[in-house]
Length: 496
Image (cartoon, rainbow, N blue to C red; front, side):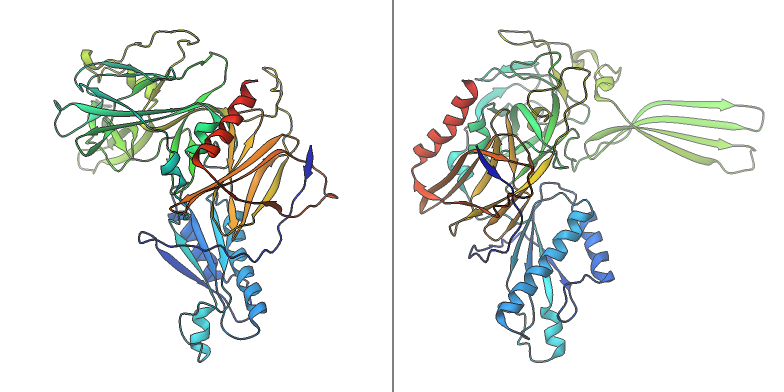
């Protein structure tokens, strides 16, 4: 087994970073011949961390200098500036993927003619909503199954691979309640599915997951993409679920080139008018009155109960108002009297071969992952504490000009780790578990063709005396069929 212990090193690659129209940027400025962050810069980065609410959004950091000193010195200074920004973000619990590039003095915003102009070039550009220039996903994307359903009838659909979904009547919010709905449904159970559709299994906090399958559910009425109604839930049963498998439902946060997972669904831009649950008037004595109002309110896709208490101690005094907000458990809402009889969700999914009655009620469509938190193999017995996990950093150097999609796949479980950072053509994985066998696959495709690189039989050792630096990976031209065969071999190794 190859032993790899890695650390970060400077690699001056030639990979290009492209920017698109929907990206925005801000600049972090530095003092002359310095890569120390000022108080103002740290405040600006704190504001940036707060404003990046999508855990799948990616950042690009571009480092620059003025034209003083040598070209080589300025190149390294611009790298140190980008690392200073990157390290500040990571040290303050920023978990999004970051790409960095350093230009030295090569990309000035002016002619560097005086000190004022040079000040504007001592900077790091922070570009938001960055996307790698790699479009291989569309080429290998798994086609969805299509179902046409009547929105006013309870519907049970079964996918090709055994996933069952029960959709109660009236679940989708649509302009025309009688128009037929087109449901597009895709199942991902194999490692090959994950790799070819650029899916991974890490949480928004970069914790590792072991997947029991992923599905994608999208509903359309004509060209209108539909969302579930505010209080609606659908029932999903993944194949081969067991009562004791510790799996949970995770919702996908889809970025430009990475997907993160959370037990909380992504926020919705819609909200509903408050639904009045109750209103009570209480007289403690002739002077004191209380009015207690309970309402349901949907905020960003989550349902809350808002309890407002108004108290007045004397008829001549104003009411004093107190408000308490409680997030509602969706299971409680399912059995609530707010649903009329024809909206009540009952158990419609019956067990079939290798299928139990384990089902989930979900508040959102889109990407849904059936996961449990990853543990070292062999898994600990119920009631035992999990074994200690040591994570190591893997630096993978792509020895070509391309920017591929790169994943680390643990051989014993359905766990696919995306890279955390990219420094030009070095892809950095921050959370690869020590002592676990893994393989690496990198795929790139554009209008010129397809390229692939692969490493098998890898393992990180917790041995600081064995430092191999960056691990090289050569991308080679291949056919689409060769890519599919390579990832299908991963499936075969897991089934043997």
